[in-house]
Length: 224
Image (cartoon, rainbow, N blue to C red; front, side, top):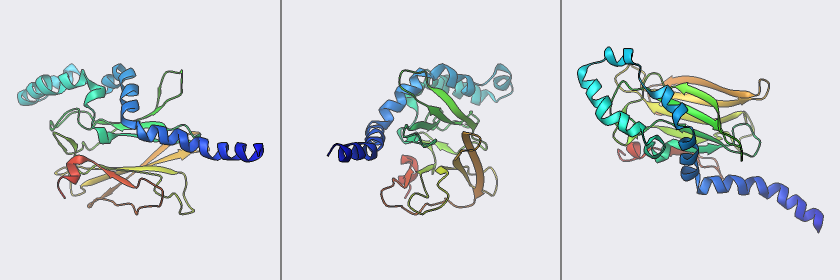
């Protein structure tokens, strides 16, 4: 009987951890982002030189609309831009978030994708910092047509190193309207790898049983 209980706990415990994060993911994510706000702002804030060389209209919008939202950064990131995924397969989910919602629909701001390792009783640390370039097309709710899928190959029996896909629209920049990032865990180098591909249409991931499949932003779903 004891052996059965031990086996049961070994199987179910990682699932319980992941479910806990799934149920309280946004709240827990905001707490972590709050801890790291100062470091995050260093990537987002424009330099004096950049502001000086921008248009007067942009400087006004940036000062009056964007900077106040940076002061409550953790609160103002879009809810659908905060995810938890076990990137390094250690049964301890990493926080993935992007800066959707911070700059409203103001163009020419700095936008980033962050992946953070969160370990109990330790300071969270960045595992990946990636500037989104070209800049995502935005409205007041966040990035337009942004999509996220965790473990898109789960249950397919191949390429289980692919942990997530993140996609967003960038209209008017060039003929390619969608930027897609594949997020991998490289077991050899023991770090996160990210690859990028472009499409002229939104990429869809076939739903896998017992998987969350695509999650889409409120701004994209409202347009359907």
